[in-house]
Image (cartoon, rainbow, N blue to C red):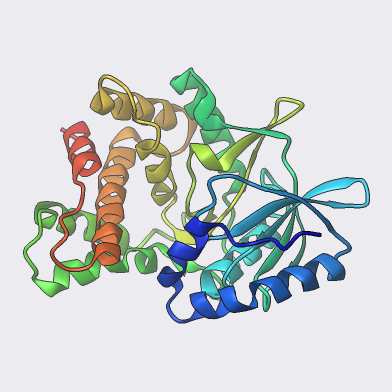
Amino acid sequence: MPRVELPEAVVDNLGAFGEAGPRWAEDFHWILERVLQQWGLTLEALYEDLSYHFVARVRRGAEPLVLKLGVPLEELRSEIAALRQFAGRGMAVLLDADAELGALLLERIDPGRPLSELDDDDRAMAIAAERMQALWCPPPDEATFWTVSRWGRAVRKLLESGTPTPLAEHLEHADRMLQAATPDGQVKLMHGDYHQYNVLQRGDGSWVVIDPKGAVGDPGYEVWPLMLNCLDCDDPVARLQARARRLARETPLDEEHILRWTHAGATLSAAWDVEDAGPGRAPDLTRVEWAATARR
C-alpha cells in the first residue's frame, strides 16, 4: 500500500494540541499501521476537508466503516466516552476504540448527505431538533465530560484579563449564561458541537449524528452552533429569529432562552478566536452582532 500522509491542513492545526500534536504526527504512520492490523482493516480513501483529525473510509472484509485518528488527549477521550454513552441512539455507532492510540472505528454513514444541504431551513431545524433530543440523557455520575462552564473558560479568562476588546459589551452576558447553575433534573449530557454538518443522512432517508464532544449542563448550550451555522442568506437576523421560533416549538426550550444562548455562544466562539489568534488580533464580531440584534 502506498505511504499515506497526514493532510496538510491537519499538520498545520497540530499546534492547537501543544507539544502533543507534533509528537503524534511523528508516530502517525506507526499508529495507522497498528490499528489497520489490529482491527483487520483495508484503507480505501481519505475524507476531504479534514482539519484536526485523520478520517478515512476503510473496510473490514466487505463491511464499510470509518477510521478516525487524532491526538490522544482529553477531548478525543471525551468523544469516545460520549459515543459509548449514546450507544447508537441517534448517533453513529462506535464499533471499537483505542483511547491510548487516539483511534476510533465507526459506522459509515452513506451517502452521508449533511443537513446543511437541505434547502428548506425550517424543515432542517425540525429534523435537527428531533435528532438532538434523541441524544440528551442524564449524565453519568463520574466526571467524564466537560461541563458547560468549563467550555466557557475562554470568556471568563478574557473578562478577567481586563484587556480592552471589541467583545467587551458581550462578555458579561456570555459569562452569566455559561457559568449559571442548571436546575436539578435539567442537566443533560449533550453532543457539545451540534450543527448542520454533524447531522448526516443515510441511504434510507434517516438522519444520524456524528462527532460528539460531550458536554454536561443546560441543554440551551446545545443550540448555539446549530443556530449560527449556514447563515448565508439575505437577512441572517430574521433567520436566527425564525430558527428560534421553530426550535422552541420542537423542544422544551423557549424562544428567549434559545436567543440568549445563541448570543452567548457567538461570544464564546469569538473568544476562542481571540485565544487562537493571540494578542492584537481583533475577532470577527459579525455573528455576535447578529445574535445580539436577534434578541431585541
